[in-house]
Length: 73
Image (cartoon, rainbow, N blue to C red):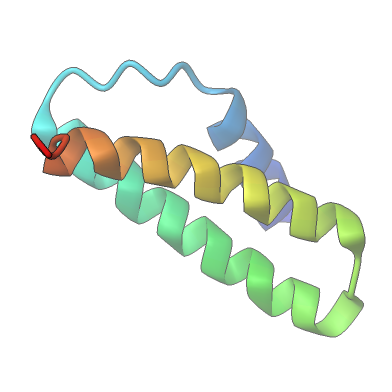
């Protein structure tokens, strides 16, 4: 389960992305990990994998908010 190990490493990584390119790379990596985990989840139906995907999605959304900026409204 190399993908699960990589996902856990990504989750534990410090999330202080200094540049925009760092944020873009992190967002793409999170998306790839989520999609790979989803393929595993389709086969195994393990609730722990679903929880990991949810946590990665939260991290990905935080990164994307920083990329897009907050709305003024």
